[in-house]
Image (cartoon, rainbow, N blue to C red; front, top):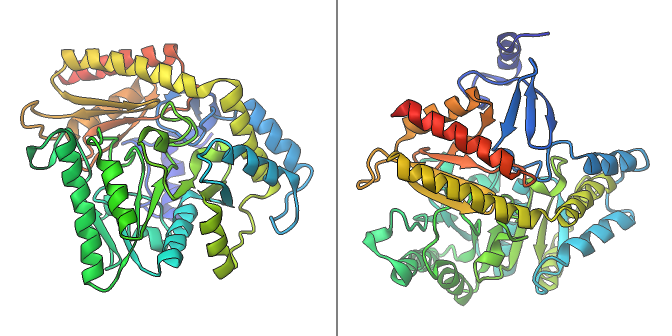
Length: 427
């Protein structure tokens, strides 16, 4: 059995020392089952981070469907195959009726890339609006929008960012609809700047729950007003549902909690429970417009094995009532975290959308100064107690929890107990 340090040295030699790894001492994971991960020594970890295996690591039904299909056939989608058609029908039935067309891809990055291409084809313009703490993938096009990794800055002249809409640290100290309107005005300002610069405006691309932005409480009416500005300017609203989709929020789709139906939805990681499958959902009009101008195809996107994996995920979500589970257990976990907030002044804010939870840590409740060192210490303490989570937020001062949505109340109690111990250690 190879030691972690020896494997790490081998990794550095072939992947470089800057390839990202979690934790001060990386973990050598060799097995997953449900909400659990196991390392090379047999140590068991409760997975509070991985939203990719949305219906649980190595879900038996998903594994069975994938195995059966890979033993039968795997070809690209320029042949007819019933599974991809059945999946498309099943998936689209969960969306608003205006979103009635699907193209399947391999990754969320690719999905966002295609969505931007669609918007630019439709409008004939180039400008894209995002937030100042955004991440939507790693193709050349979407990397221009990765403000999260570029100190809040966009790359190039075709992207503009707005301040992340946030009720905890509000713009100009505003509240309520006035705050939402102020942030929406930033969208209008960016649109006007694009037009004045001769670039023109194509789309606004955001996650409907602002997942990478640490799921702030989005100010009242912001999304509705921002969408109105976008559409008044002839642009498209693109919602990245890679993290908010497939029941994560306690709704099938995050957009269902916003009051706005987007023009394009992008899908990714959880779609195949770890199998690389993703997609773009939009209207017949936009899809036909795009395909008539771009002979887009994807060798692996929507192949029979990918479609079987994706169908299995839909089956399990529906059969096991996992959307309701995300809603119920997420609320239970938030209640427990609010109790810890009353006990520890380090907790400045607790935010929750289904089984996506963020705990923001601050040095002072009044000034709200971020506490990134405390967040790092707690993540490491939780790991030592057998629980894996991560950090988020511009200052990396917020604990990020988004377990597989098969997570249950017993799991939640274990997390609350361990977090109480980790917070107590810092007192």
